Image (cartoon, rainbow, N blue to C red; front, top):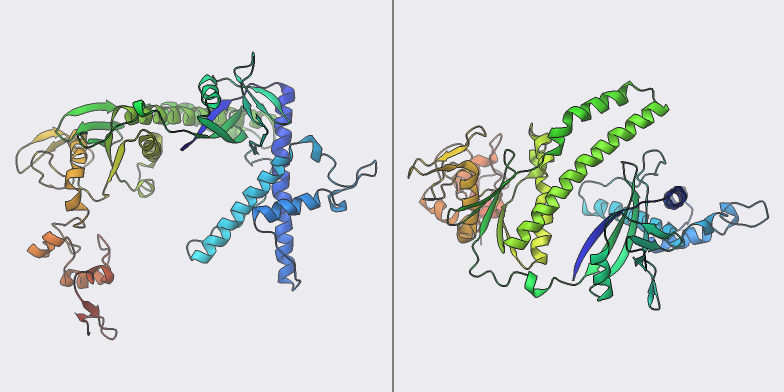
Length: 485
């Protein structure tokens, strides 16, 4: 089975938009009410009272169900007790808000116990800046599901409980066929308000695997295709034999729309806070941001789907995208969507039965010659042609890197099992000797120097050294010596 999410843009009337806004507000209200109950219980426990704190999603659901019919939630003018407007919205909205809060509390407590970076305690959702959304489960009663797609004369529509038929912009024919043949099952429906002013409906489905005719059958004889990602060219595809297959150019919507984005940002800053003019200017700016995100996301999904269909074995380099985002290339990297492309390609290749090999982060695909295998010095970004000093091979920089990535599956034993043998150690000196080139481990003398280095190029742990040598550091002096039996 595979899990996917299908998004549809809703085409609503004024009454339907009001109903969706009411449900989103009810979800936010339940979340804030339960969070307040949790904080009150924690405060009472600090004062010494024996109070049970609702923490899990199940406890939070029960807490809200008792509160909404109690006098604490209010008394109506006709004498009825409880939350008088609770029947105007679907009850699942309250339950799913409680589940969301339970997950946030569980993440907060688990990270605290693990000793890692502490996650923040959940905060109240404000009406002004919170994301308007709510979720509905697809409960099945008999042969009729709560969430239905299409209908007689209403092919482009989705029916939700309590909300009725909601027209959508996109075609639902493919989803309706899968549901009719029992090849898909709807799990959840999430309705959210987009920054551009539209409402979006996302269906989380559990679908059957692709037909065997559309899947890759065995990869024993398939050539590995390397994918080298870049900024000038989004991706260059080349085989292990040295043949360049394709060059993919990215639309880079942020770079194209940056002048307009700056103009709208200045327009927002000039408007008076709280005025209608500032609200309209913010709306125009949010629409442009949404447009940029939509173009980038559409390109990534189209490119990843096409590559997953046409190639059975792909090799992708492992990049520290989070580290690169702290450099001067951050804006260009974000506009290229490297991480989004890698994430989409990984699960789409698995859906198609293909193989995606992730090259080691320290595999020198840019510095390695695809013809003779010699590893040279690092190339500056301005140099776009690779020239090998050993054999004289010349090729485009990105093409040579893609070919080296295509050759990685045949060389992975050398670079993964050997822990990337270096020609220069942490002290910027020569290698540690002939035995270090065979094992890829750091020598004992080099490890001792690395302990006192100011900025070592790579970290060396004593436990790693002990995997090959039964040596231990002396606790008094800190000098390495043979371990006693």
